[in-house]
Length: 121
Length: 108
Image (cartoon, rainbow over all chains, first blue to last red; front, side):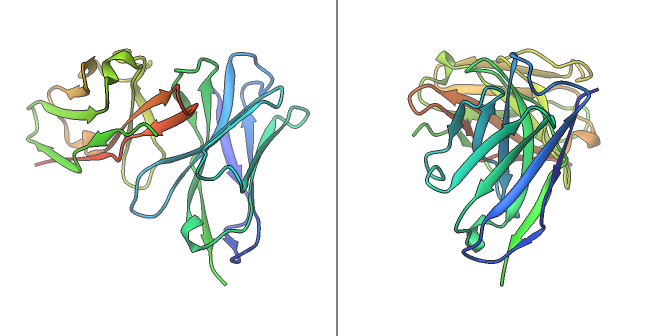
């Protein structure tokens, strides 16, 4: 059974960089059939897509965050990562990693449990 | 960018049918996925490619699309179906995953 697990600091100071890692178990991140992505959800609000990465390193980003976001993949560790620079309190959210079928129309079929990141001094 | 519109809330009595709609410009030409998010939990895929149920999702859940609306229908509603439901598409113009704002289903 595929499992995704987010990890990283739960508290980040304003203007600093948020860094999260998603560890994939029960399957290979190097499969040609999937993208790997990040989604966030501010408290009490809806879902916002951050971006996707393919195992070869190809990336798609939400244009509203593109200038601050980097998503990368480490196939040797079966992990992928999110970096979000210059964070503000508006970046406080639950951050989820998820798998998406390698089809431009594909769904997000497996999700991690999520990790809450609070931006505060 | 492409916008998906959902009503904030809908309610249904146990045993009745709940209908959750997702509006978007010519959404019938796109592929729609639906997610259920119970309180305090991660989203779960309940319908993909418009009308396909993942393994383990009851056949009480069904989806359809036509024109400017996509619909998630939950038949014989149960208390356990109480959750937020999100529609999602891929916008080919922006190369973005797009979510609707979510609809909270209350089971009365």
